[in-house]
Length: 255
Image (cartoon, rainbow, N blue to C red):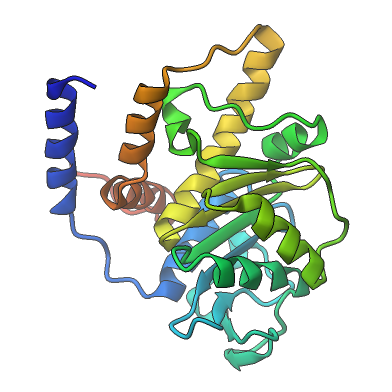
């Protein structure tokens, strides 16, 4: 990377660091993130899951079973313990969320998880092809996405948690064969933004595969782009953009 590029990235990070994020609670950010995911094709009925680590390392915030992303509100979120017993809130958690706890235990850096079955990522999961990262918009996944080639079945037991956690290793995303995607972020904002762009990455990969051969990017450039896209500043400003689109926040006035 040239000195000019390095300087430009440093200046952009400094500018974005001064942007004020809304003073939302974890539950509010999760609820907004659910609306963002629903608006970007991640609804899949009741199959989607968007959770966050609780303050206690053995707890997490999750939606009650029976609510879709497009319906989620902050007050709907439940705080559950290691056995998925409800500590705060009303409702019954989705038993399929159990595997999230395995990831949280193994990865202290992970603060939020998105697991969904959107159509493009699901289609990719059906043909046995891993996610290919070869476009600048999807560089947040460069050398940072795994592929689980075997489907372990319906996700209700601890076995799937162990399988997915071991397959994810130290990466932030994984494509699950015959299943869907998982994004593990160091914030609610990062997990949500990765979820949106994973589906975008799958969509353009399928289009590229139909048109010809996918060409790889230069590793050094891919790594730089990955690190920039993963910066908290970049994740936060992107989350805010998506939040405005679903919350109908007025755009800047024309005059």
